[in-house]
Length: 385
Image 1: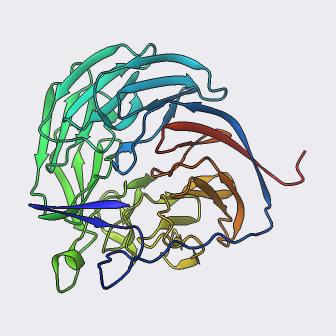
Image 2: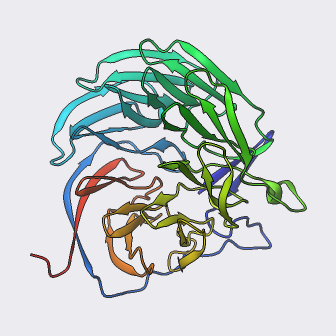
């Protein structure tokens, strides 16, 4: 589910069909059908961090780097563990209402907060390096970019902070539409280019060192008779692969663009507020109705569409070996064949919803539920070993 923000008015937008009112009931979630499983999913470890984030729509999602997993809770708890075994390495309480992160890199673990603070912890021991107060809530993970940290805030600003002490190096500011989805996309960094998706449906590229614009292009442009229908937002994280960018937009398109120029390589009229996933041949996205769709990476042609999860508030997909994985509002993980979209396996993590897409590192896939359970799974084909 996503929350739409309006000046003087709060509206709810479901991941279903998507706007419902008293005269138009919201579409019920699809019933899960049985199938013959071709993958065997086994739990490697589980850790309960306590607390919960129900309906807060935060950007908290584990991150793995250097054999360690890092995760945080809205209550301010940060936990670092051996990513393979789940054994605690360190733990700290920040005293902050964490809302996004962690971003991990350059020896730092970075979080944004509901109060507009960015905090940097030392990845080795969890000790605070610095924290800085910004102008707005941070609901997209801060991104380490060598000597800088790139941060989005909900007031339409993008800042580059010094990785050494959090001081501001440059910032970009643009107007926020009157109506927008709750959430921001996480900036993507490649070399000296920072790519940012905006609440007005635009995608922009900027010089990492100075913030100077390189190019901008319109990805989403909602059309309709009212503000809800005209809402356009790039809420999913841009993904950079080689010299190409792949991105999804709400009331817009799933598209491939050239990193150097921002020119469209292809575009398909599919509305989504999720991150895309990319492998050698395909681009995968969960659309606004929770149907998972695969596109040809070179041409944008639709390869398959899986509608068996419709209206189940499905997360964005992630590529995990020879399977595509999504989570849903009942805490299920679904494993799909990347060639056909058919179901390969299903496992229930617990009763709490999975609202952020799983992450993959090595031979394990990790998920954080709304009640802050961190769970790691391994997958193998049935009949192996």
